[in-house]
Length: 255
Ligand SMILES: Cc1cc2nc3c(=O)[nH]c(=O)nc-3n(C[C@H](O)[C@H](O)[C@H](O)COP(=O)(O)OP(=O)(O)OC[C@H]3O[C@@H](n4cnc5c(N)ncnc54)[C@H](O)[C@@H]3O)c2cc1C
Ligand code: FES
Image (cartoon, rainbow, N blue to C red; front, side, top):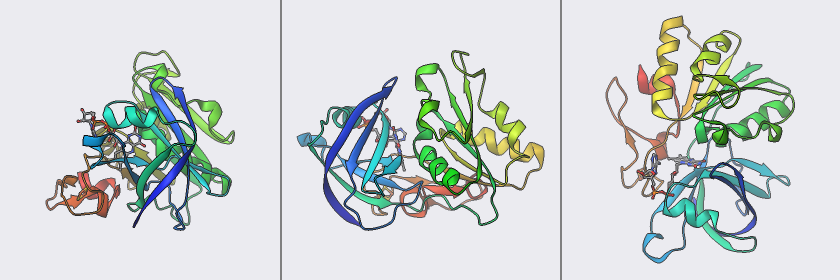
């Protein structure tokens, strides 16, 4: 694990209050969808703590990588103000990332809100391997939905919004129920209530499908020292999201 100071290549407000930031990728380590970077912000008193952000996409043979983030507080606001040529420091890549099982041909990707960030790159990879990919994008309203035009054309997209302003009206769990039996493997990222609902549906349908989730928690260090990212599986014990995850099989946490 190493710290890098890198250059901003492109920064834009992509939709709603969600920014995309392309940075030079100086790491020599191959990155896996689902891994994250601890990104350090430049303001004096807040610069000690990193902000964990998923790797959203790669381009130019991996020479640049993107972060997709909602502006919610000081750190993400600072990042959204970076211009081309400015410097940003990060540590990474961190965490385990998604694991595509060798026999998977039909992949169901379930993204709640900004949880779509790592799934877009996973969709890029799966579709490049000629897998059949369906991406579910769920949000409260239209301006929280990742632009479908920026997803590879061979990826099937089903969008849901709670207010019906885009796609189907309702929750992402509805199309999930319909598509679960179609899929060989499920990959998800989003808020915890969504994971609880997805796990409930696995139980309801008696499905033994593999479902990998990316979990989020506040992180102070990002590499196993501070325990701020501890999560407590229902069957007992403790897992660190930064070191043991952020990808877990849903049953490891909720069974
Ligand atoms: C492994 C991982 C990957 C992530 N990937 C992304 C991503 O790709 N895009 C993205 O937009 N966000 C992502 N997040 C969440 C992101 O880290 C937080 O949104 C960010 O740290 C907020 O920083 P801030 O300084 O802007 O806000 P702060 O001022 O630190 O916080 C603003 C608000 O957000 C809450 N908050 C802060 N961090 C988290 C968190 N980790 N989980 C839940 N609530 C939090 C705070 O309680 C507060 O209410 C990820 C988190 C983890 C753990
Ligand atoms: S963030 Fe410090 S132990 Fe996980």
